[in-house]
Length: 215
Image 1 (tube, helix red, strand yellow):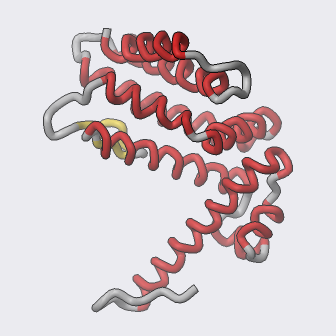
Image 2: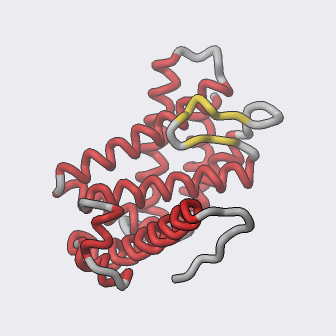
């Protein structure tokens, strides 16, 4: 793949862009294979989907756990971008304290709407389900998944604290953990994997999710 140089850009920046493009294509391939093959999503299968040698894949992601970590981080970055676009809420993946909006705390109703809208994507839900299954079998991947959810909870906790500075820190964290557990569990039902979705369930889900963030 050729990459055009930007005016004034040197070889170093061109190589950086090339590396970024290649990394993105590898993550795209990983998502496809994880959804299609689950536990059989080997590095060899992912390299084949990307049309590269296994050694090339391992140059970017030495182990399957490294690759899944990058897949989850990209998924979280995309979620944060959607929140920013819809609600104005700015978040930095590795710095929950950076949370904020130009106008003050974001509306919890809008935040919940964005989070639940992601469950309308069956491929995304299936991706998470397959990663959960892998984590149940592989200790290294389980460590990666726990770290992902630690960051997820930390972001929700920061949001709760911003909206309710009168609440104790431990209480905010408990609310955040409950919110994440509720929303993630709901994905299985709302996607049809573990049950059937209904308007009544959705209404209750939204009500309780919003209450966890502000009431």
